[in-house]
Length: 402
Image 1 (cartoon, rainbow, N blue to C red):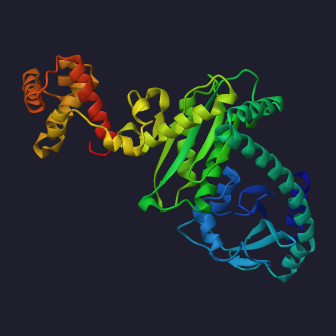
Image 2 (image 1 turned 120 degrees about the horizontal axis):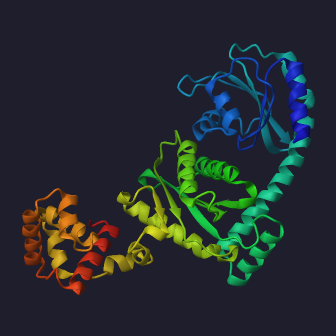
């Protein structure tokens, strides 16, 4: 990294212009001093060390990923972006990164570009070495997480021992897994820009935690963070940070309609990551199905949904619910009765608390409960009946009927 910083500083002095160097995914690596006024995108990338997906998409429209020579890109007022000159850095045919010059008046001329061209090979070699070291470490981490969540038990134990031996996690620490999942409108498939956004959010939160206290992996349509279960940084706070970071990273990606975060079960050792991961995915699925749960779903707080979410879609659809509840759900005039019944059962049959929650007079509540018993042909004083009705209501929510 010191070699790259030295090269950027020397080139900035020679050209008389501030410079930013990014990797091939347009993540900030190093930058020179910036005395001149900069635009919103430049100041944002320096402060957060990342480029938003919408800005990446803007630049990619002008062919920077395929270019071998400098590319001039126009400005965009909506993005807060001034015109630029982008110089791709390649080692042979391998794209390694980009040098960026803000050039609002088009004054970056042939002399400055010739100075850049003279040192491009040096940038390429330094970036290649840095990239190789970084990719090895990144691939090693990614492979470790992949084995922890998909490998056989013996593999999980072995990988956990290897990670602990490197000092990546403190010995004897518990762990918890978080899932970050953007939801695409219209059921589209995740693309490269979305996965870049997921990676940016995970890296941002991992940096907050400390690189030795977390691992991350980007999968097809979600990212996962395995972190030390440390009371000094409550998991709920980390989950909120991850949700907010992914929101910022996905800003401008029109296909993202929602973001959910699932918090898995706490586990005693790194070798149990798979169980925590599976629970985090189930929690995220519940958050997707039931917006009322909120965008962040903690497995430990899902109640009955912990059991129901393990059922497949086919099993959920085939599940038989209380026949009286079926009649109630099918009656379009009975919406108030269904709401009353669920609130009453959620509050353990407390008429006082239910009346307060629904802003009803106690007499009105008793009238509704009596009507429910008539329609459902049930007795709400019967514990078995209450359980069957309550379970049926939760199944109806998971299947979208409620």
